[in-house]
Length: 585
Image (cartoon, rainbow, N blue to C red; front, side):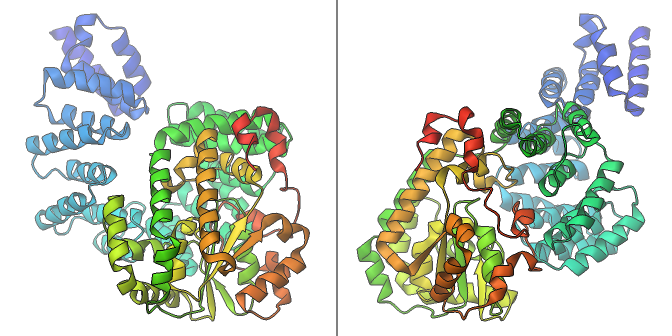
């Protein structure tokens, strides 16, 4: 017993010093009987947790739980291990158990709210935090958590409101100005974003995330040289920051012998137990190999990155087939004819630019929004949100039945609500909406807004798909992007749906060829402006000089004069691709 007390005391000391590897090694050397004691299992589990070895942490802490389910620390940290492994059903149960052991514990409330949110139980996540605020009405941590949920669901105005509340309660709350800045960045209020980042920089001058986000802001508005400086500053403060590595490789070319590459490889080694950071590092290294024409290593790196990313996203090709099939069956010729005879909202303001990701949508928006009568809206989710609000059923059969029976009564309302959102952006004659996946909703768009213009961006299928495969998509709504097979299958479904829309709406949809846009820009622009009912504007040919905000991964490319090196770019990787991929038209 005396020996055990000494061991526990030493382990506590090492944990306090954050010598987690030493804790793990010391416990590994103990007798088997000691290793199985709940407290020893807990110490090693915590050390695994702090070094991102989540599976080992879970195994240790779950074993400790079987021996002692009454220790709050064991229960809570077992919840954490499951949470980081995305076992949300289990983490929900464990955080609830932790709250039974330690009623109204702030940390357990916060992590239960996060776990509920991640398991799509958003309503109960909000409810939990709201109830906690009744107990702790002035707790900035709870307001911060509430703000973060609003941020995740893209309700930036409420996120700003509650982050501001946090700031009032605790002016030195960690990262509150940084988070406010990111919210303002997302609504294109760049001056307010910079202001909050500058305040955060004064409060925490060694916070690498401040410099990283300043780099992002400057990249979006086209100040590439200054953004590069801030990314390098972020890496100076955190030499393993994978996102800064990835952003830099997107705006700058590096030679393989440059020390930057050596540092990136060290980051890959450092992040071997952190999948998200590891995959971003692999995408960065892949881009460097491509710039140096080492396509085999480039392919190997983005393949590793995609394998890691695919583990993180939930995607079902079967779900997509069902969705697209439902849309085609619903918006048949008879139904569309009936809808066109119903009252709708007449507005020529919206210009929808859509198609597959990486098909030239960003370039198209840059060209069109360089016109004196057009303002860039970026990737807007208004149409999806309005449709969801009016037809909330998740079941496809029930959704289709609801649309079939009631859309003719809501056409005008949907069109009016959409244009109201556009007017909040700008009162210009025309505003672009560049969300690629609006191609799914063309039936709704053409029936609710019959005078809206739709530009369908087309590009060589293999060029489109290889560009998707080798780039990082941070949002789960591009879940197909991380598997060669799934990209090919998705492309075929998209192509089939677009053929359906062309059959129904014909020349009401303008096909904008990426290749023709590059090889014959003036003639293509003449045809495009004629379709858009806009006068000729020479500035559209100088789109690379535009000061528009660009948030997508095409930021750097879209700010360059037109170049043709991206045509047939897939052939660089031809030797490594499957026959299915190469069979794409």
